[in-house]
Length: 308
Ligand code: OGA
Ligand code: MN
Image (cartoon, rainbow, N blue to C red; front, top):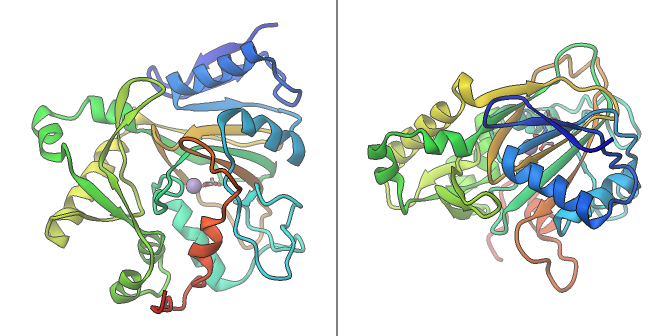
């Protein structure tokens, strides 16, 4: 059986079947998987049979994998630093009850693009479901290329050449983490153009979402109003769909062509085990690097040290 692509929205999102991604893929299959991502921005593969190792191997066809921050004396939970934990379980596999961590994770319920707060942007995220709640816990996606295409010309002119300042701590503050603007000022942030050129499709896309804190060179209030307006525009119903998960499902999204957010579920009582690999944009570094460890070395809540 050959690969079959079933669009979810006319311009965005597809269910892909007829290809066994748990086995090594030949060059032609890899090209087809990448082409599907370039066109559709989000691809859903059901019942993949992937495990940690094959998840990582499959992800590597897209490029260099980011490494989750390591903590002194603690080996990575699933034995691989390439796996980011997007679920609600502790190191030992119980349901997380730590209030500070739960609030921090609430940030994923806001429309966001993974890692836009880093200087080096993430291109693809590949999220694999292991355990899912009985209700809720779906993931929502929004089409930032079509949203850009459909903007009135006056808005395209207004935002051309603008840059946004992105901070993880800003989206955490929005989610309820007790941080002040001054504390966020002291922590790292990254600047990216508000409109990006999506290489794989030749289309342009909005690059905003929850980490975007300010527009460079604009008054804070005006910049934030513009950021909110663009997020609202891009998350209108015609740009949005949700995915209901079952164990074994893999969803790949292109962070440079979409935004996403997690859906609510009974997080204190229901288990959700989701593991994610993240592919960095551009050419791999000569040696594996560790920018996330640097970012999180400031801790989740306490202000960063300023002697760096
Ligand atoms: C992520 C993320 C949302 C979800 O893994 O980057 O935002 O529904 N996940 O798990
Ligand atoms: Mn995310």
